Length: 169
Image (cartoon, rainbow, N blue to C red):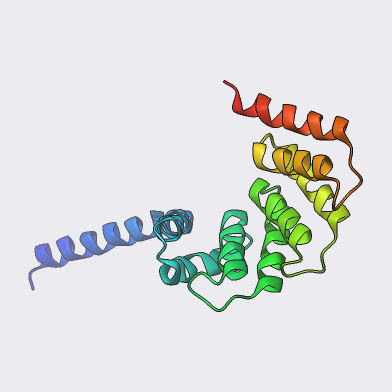
């Protein structure tokens, strides 16, 4: 090997090392999250789990919520509602709006936790503060129906109105 070719090889290796060092682990994290979301959305739950589970373990709220959805509903895995609820709670602690909503659903239906309509209402109200209509509409139905909680038509109308405002451009 000539001194010139050795120098070229050394410079190439140094350049490659810089590229590798500059490739931030955040880039890999974001790529895995994006790929995991795509896998989830296209119902490739096995791949979604492989990509999202490590991110959920690192505390990523979106990954925790999606993992919770898979666990609660047995999507690509054996159903494990208590574990799904645990992931929803972790995501909700980071203000993931859909996690708040799903905790409300869990308490309303008794999936993964003992049924508790008052806790359900509490979680739906937390989710409603984020301005999404689903929990608002659910609160309206609960108060209108009066089967699970004392009927309150004023509260019911309030929540229906809130849901309508959110959905009206």
